[in-house]
Amino acid sequence: MNIEVKNLNKKFDEFALKDVSIDIPKGKIVGLIGENGAGKTTLIKCILGAMVKDSGTIKLFGKDYDNLAKDDIGVVYDDSFMIETFTSKDINMVLKNMYKKWDSKLYFKYLKEYKIPTKKEIRKLSTGMKKKLEIVAALSHHPKVLILDEPTSGLDPVIRSEVLDIFKNFVDNNENSILLSTHITSDLEHIADNVIFISNGEIIFDRPLKEIKDDYIELDIDKNNFKDINKKDIIRYKENRLDYQVLVHKKNMKKEYEKYITHLTTLDDIMLLYIKGEK
Image 1 (cartoon, helix red, strand yellow):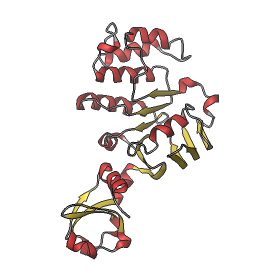
Image 2 (spheres, rainbow, N blue to C red):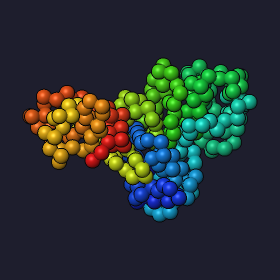
Image 3 (tube, one colour):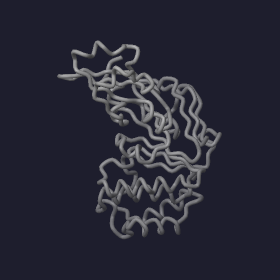
Image 4 (tube, rainbow, N blue to C red):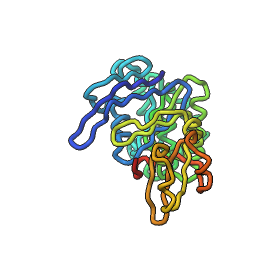
């Protein structure tokens, strides 16, 4: 495993991560989903040593963060860390003094490939260009793991597709891996191998994406017929004005349920029903 988190706890006044355990395998893209305030950013900060955990263990490549070669981890946050008056050329001068494995040749190759200007100030770049520059900078010291917090937020569909292709290429060697926290779950449905769903500081599931898609189904049931559903078969349900949305496991799809409207569930559907629905 490139990242192993076991029984991680971090308590605040009104929120806590509770016994969080996750694995990020080699060669995999792992999506991290959950509502605002679910604990995604706290988990990432604990992994990166930017926040002190209360208990539990965190290992990257089998080592504590403090004992790592920092070049092995590439990080892209939701907010840019780059000085707005710098150019991408200036960024190279700064980062080559920060990372032992910084590769200027690779960096400028990426700039050319992704059409990122070298002489324009960062503040004058589009949102998409800024994000591509951050990702290129994260890749140019040859990391083994990318940890990404909302890397495609605010990007148009064309740029988002280009960025997702960068991520897929990064794990092609089956050694590198990515932990990608995002609200745009449709991105994960295109590239993720595994998905971790966290809510209120607890892991709801940590499973392969294909397994998730094969496991759940949503029923739309008239209010008069809701009583006909065996309560043991219901994972979550949500009452609407005219009907109920009901999440069930496909293995519990009885023949008598087939008369109701069914949907193949998206990650958004599953997350919404877990968070807003009732047991």
